[in-house]
Image 1 (cartoon, rainbow, N blue to C red):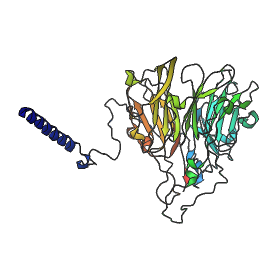
Image 2 (cartoon, rainbow, N blue to C red):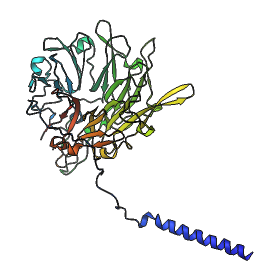
Image 3 (spheres, rainbow, N blue to C red):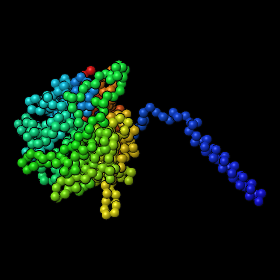
Image 4 (cartoon, rainbow, N blue to C red):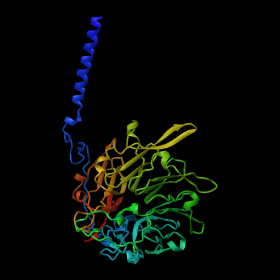
Amino acid sequence: MIAAVLGTLAGTVFLAVAGFWVDRSQDTDLADPSAGLTSRFEHSLPANAPRIVFRDVAENWGVIGDHGPGPRRRLLTEDTGSGVAVADLDGDDDLDLFFPSFGTGSDGGANLYYRNDGGRFSEVAAAMGVADPSGFAMGATTADFDADGDLDLYVTQVGANRLYRNRGDGSFEDVAELLGVAGDLWSVGAAWGDFDRDGRLDLYVANYVRFDVEATPAVADSEAGDPSWQGVPYTLNPNAFDPCPNQLYRQRRDGTFEEIALPTGASDPAGRSLGATAVDLDGDGWLDLYVANDVSPNALLHNVGDSDGLLFEDWSARTGTADPRGSMGISVADLGHPADGGDLAKPDGLPDLFVSHWVAQENALYQATRLSVAGGERLEYRDRVRPLRLAEVSTDRVGWGTAFVDFDLDGRLDLAVANGSTLEEPGDGTSGLIAQRSFLFWNDGSRFHDLAEAAGEAFRRPRVARGLAMADVDRDGDPDLILTVTVVDR
């Protein structure tokens, strides 16, 4: 009996001591809270990282025009644009550059069209009929919508959009109003695609918020009369404005278009849309839509492919892609699944989605997978931005245009992201936006590494970047990078 009591007592004492030791060893109140912390995300590049260097050749090649909103009025429209289109618009077998202009910059607010003359570019927007000095352009996309062999140009605007039909003689005519695709909202992104599989290209237009540039007053340096006031006025907050429904224009047999977004379920009326991509996400042969929305959930609209009429179902929640963050840009690629024993260089047949976000929100990389469920399969996406090392490095940036491209030609898709803040430089409130360095992520087969620091002075330089495109502009066999940069008069 005594032995049993002593044994119980010894066990109790042992447990008490062990518990005290564990408690002391894990007591965070006694730990140094700054131990192991750094001011920024640190990582080292692997020894086999490629040596990739970019040079800024814009001035040498004659791409020298500025574009921007002019004197800053602290309006939301100043912070958004603009994009860039890269295509052989004049049919001479080299790539031209089109920059939409969104205000009254040093070139008078006109769009800029740089014709590639073989190593040099000439600005010929006015001669080509696409300058549009009275417009307020945001984005641009190209397609041969009328199937005549020439690329046409669609330009989204604050207000009526433009559809520049290529005449085939080096000039364009705006037929947006005539063909029914002008609209009258604030449009930003657009995507061409044959959504009903009738052999004719249709057009999806992403609209942002209801914003009247003329009726919205400019905001002074201080709303409270205090020169040191640094608050963000409502005129820069997208939450202060109602969202716009998107538009789906189906092309008729006669070349005109009818707007059918609402009856087909494609309007996404609660989304503040900045971009959209048309891609067959589940491999059923029908083009689906993924829509990037600012401060409202993104939308994955699945094309049902109904033989009785075009119809989209909202699969955002069921697929895990209803991203509520500030989404700006989208890029699509089939990356595979390294976590499942695959390789990032080996596609699995399902497109994945990269989405750039606002500051402190991390970018997203939604990788697709098929799940077996009762009655068949279900498409699901999982955000793998952290294990692929694309998360922490992005928290202090505002991401915009983005593109997957194999820039080191090793057979694996790499990733570029244009960064530029929508927050103002500290000062008087009108000194412009904070410049940021863009990303150049190298894919090593299992994760991504940012090579921007080692990619030359042109890439290390911070900019207020927005649009991004990758293309082999000089036809030397490797991809070049085109960035649009917002210029604000101070």
